[in-house]
Image (cartoon, rainbow, N blue to C red; front, side):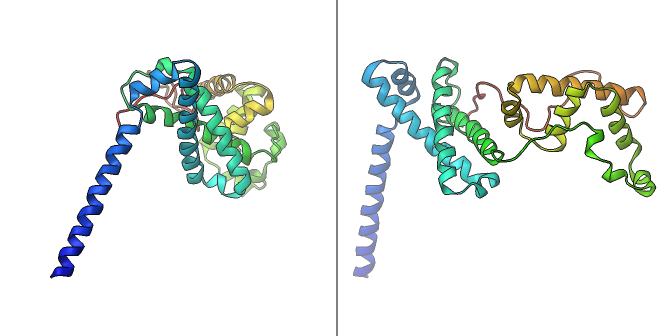
Length: 248
């Protein structure tokens, strides 16, 4: 029984020590107002706050990169480079949008979204770094799926209409971008970088192309026109410049 009592006392001491540690951490952890105040300050106060923010972004980026299957083949050294690059970009993004923080969520929750966003961008960029991106015309892709009458017959009427619409209804530029992003799966940010443009321009190209294709299909009775609201966003829709706040 004595052994049991000693064990209970020891456990109680550990529990109390744990609670004290948690309280100390809570006291040390910056509050939302502290984050904003320190990051808006000048001199050593701001420098220290930026350092703390960068550490936060490093942890968030490292966690996100570790969850992404695309990062597995990058290797440890390249993954570290990706994490650091994402943390750097996320830190800059948070600082440039500091006035957008409205306090509807915890500051760390809000800031984490920037790290997650930039981690995804950097991983995609790294995974496509050594891959060539081609933008062939529709006809240059070959007709592997249409190589025989049997294969052609198996293709649905809608499928054939989509292919015809891509050939006839959209511009050559829209077609190349749509095929690269929606068919070949090239990340929008990677494609924008290779083409020397920005994501916004490519998203507009995708949107306009989809609208033309939708109208082409609707005219042939294959797709009902939507009575309102924008068309559904493309795969990998553009994230907003400032992540929306959510309640933790």
